[in-house]
Picture (cartoon, rainbow, N blue to C red):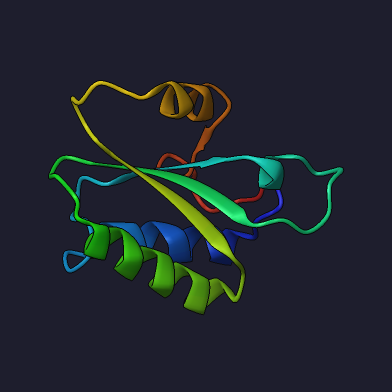
Length: 106
């Protein structure tokens, strides 16, 4: 995984901030940042929340994470309990939970 423990903690704390997505938010990393052999690339995040999120919630989260990491970020928002789209299913199948990650590099 090509994220530092500090970057992971920044993503997790931003996702669980009450003003953004709430305490129950789950964050998953998918895409090129999971491959240690690759270079560059954006940070692809799948974020699950118990509440329905708005376009503004997504934009606010994306802005805050990009600003903190100084990296481009793609965000896929999913409401827990809703039927997943085909893309969400593929992303989840190849994703690593950052919420369960304790901050040490994998």
